[in-house]
Length: 112
Image (cartoon, rainbow, N blue to C red; front, side):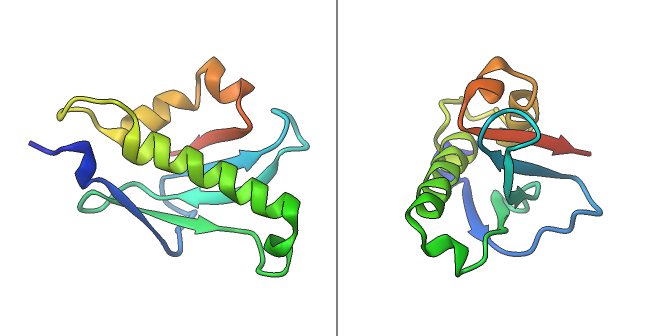
């Protein structure tokens, strides 16, 4: 059995030629800003690549964007209530097509 507490994520490089999820912040339209990429898990660990430069992440607005995105990552990949048989990657793919995804601050888009 895999407990949700065994799931984790780390920063790294995501290969966009392979399956991944893109995380956008802002209005659910063309003005949303691409902030991060997430790769499927390997051994219960997701790789997350943040796309904001160090200089831009120093502003208060950018800090809030990163905080919002990390909060979503923690919730959907690590904390989301699930039983031991649930697969957080499959749930995230499902989440990309929900109203919650459309109305939240952070928007998840799946790229198979």
